[in-house]
Image 1 (cartoon, helix red, strand yellow):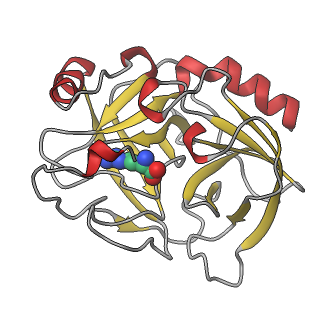
Image 2 (image 1 turned 60 degrees about the vertical axis):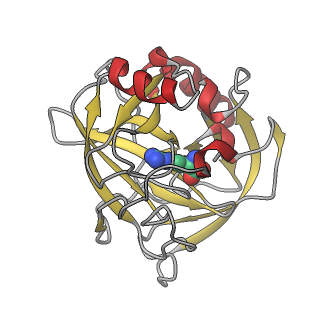
Length: 240
Ligand code: ARG
């Protein structure tokens, strides 16, 4: 989070206002060792936020924990990264282009999460992560939490953040949240998903940033997958 996010505003409430995910519910959700989330977008590639990783290039510093919503579970699998590709246009989380793909040392025997095939950017979506359950929490969670959040019109979201001195990159972002329900620190990089007509999950967003967590009038900001679908596919294909 940028420094301005921690200054002065209204007290935070319970985040994610979420529930604990049972095993097998989100089998493609993964935890990254720097304290972010991600999703398996190919058997050997994780999609996460650009601000979670370093620059494009070889990288064996990230450990990815997959295959279990409880990170301490015996069915959790840990694998190392071998390479990172970060959006070449990434600068900082609030300036858009907040996505990256990470190549793993080996394929994981788990389902993958497809990118949304269409441009749907409105609705009620599911978000998840092992991050803080309150803005003031000092710890991350051992178990995966999830919540459903409605999208907020770009104008409303942009107006709120303009007051806080940040210009929302509207065509690259989805804002979402409701009273007391939001993602929070440590959830970054994790997937925002919806079900398609056949009931399968597809990824519509990536947890990116927000002012604090679940503050009234402010919403979580998510990288809009539809805007980057072709670039993400190409990058994952190269690493896959
Ligand atoms: N940037 C944060 C992270 O690194 C994610 C923040 C999401 N915040 C929010 N209020 N929705 O984990």
